[in-house]
Image 1 (cartoon, helix red, strand yellow):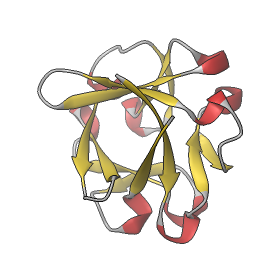
Image 2 (spheres, rainbow, N blue to C red):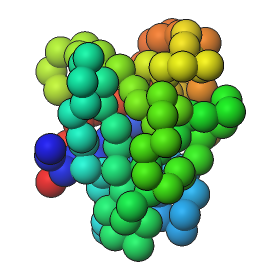
Image 3 (spheres, rainbow, N blue to C red):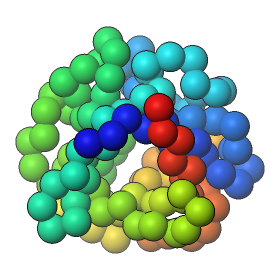
Image 4 (cartoon, rainbow, N blue to C red):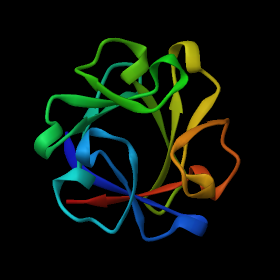
Length: 128
């Protein structure tokens, strides 16, 4: 396990994946623990992104085709395949019912994109 912040690349560079205020969004910079996740390695090359700070105990979820915070890991909806794109850059693919979707920050919003399209789905891992 390691603590990381995920910086959006491309047009949204400088913004970070945030779970602050119990919602999923892009925050300008790292303001505190709301932009820090515990990267938990699971079996079969899967990972889970656990919240820190006030949302501790919640995980980034793609269940039901939406991005939100789930209490604990309930199943594949909170599991991701983290793909390495080199230079500390990664993307996150969904599993389960959302297989084929990728975590996206394109167009300055958080959503699930149909597959990896480019920098809108690329994140720079910043270790805390």
